[in-house]
Length: 141
Image (cartoon, rainbow, N blue to C red; front, side, top):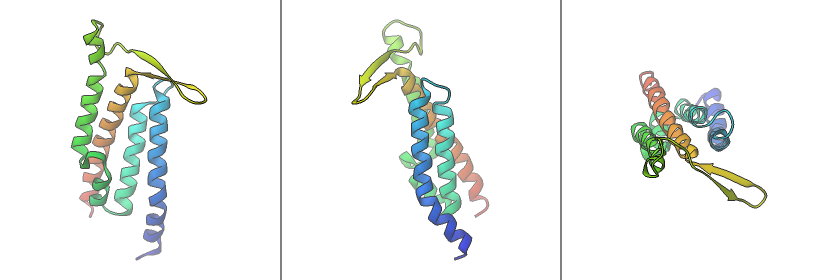
């Protein structure tokens, strides 16, 4: 095995998890600040692309949640749509958001249906971009 491939594989293992953790932090922080589901989904997709380049597209697909980019994107779309259901059930406009505060040990965390929507966008973008990139990389294998 070439030294460059070996180096890429050794660095891809921890870097994959660091990028995914960063995407989750941006997902959770972004619902109140700029960022959120879209940019976090792009970061998660970049982790999948890194894995596909370092190892193989098959290995990258195995590491995706729900084992398929299509399943991941579809579940994200369903979650994003479900974020509007509480508003409809309470007689408000679709995607009207509800907020609550969760007291944690040191600080309070604001949670809302916005986070559910952002989580849906996150999964949808991760699935679509990863699927597209992996399919492009498969043509070069």
